[in-house]
Length: 191
Image (cartoon, rainbow, N blue to C red; front, side):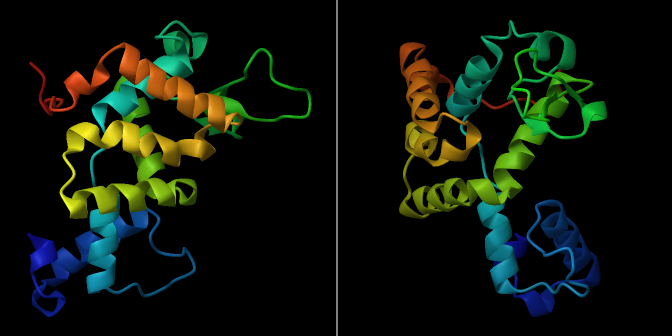
């Protein structure tokens, strides 16, 4: 609704909310003191506030956790193998190379892992191509039930071995018919 409203007609409350959301999704440079609401800002927010295909998320989680059997998933609620360089926020990989300093980010609840994964794809500069491709698919009217395979190619930065990662993610989606889940939605208030 806000994206159809002229920016001059937005209330201060609406503008402040948009600026907060834009800051959360890292649209503004942190050094920018007085961000303003423009048509371009609203368009960029639309690009970032969009779905992550269910099949893609499940396939990535399956690959990153060994179908939920990794110690990161079991003891750290980490479903997507996101890295952190803050040892207090993660778990050290047992076979981490001696010259590496990262840990795998851990979470108090599984839902926090999913939220962080979504935020990562929708805000990190590494996934700008992912967001751009997703926006083009939406503009063209491509059914979102086909987005998973089309967007997987844009995840080259998600793994150190991008070719294997992309091929394996697609294979997990195909072999497990995960595209059948694309129209499902998580209830915001599970009973």
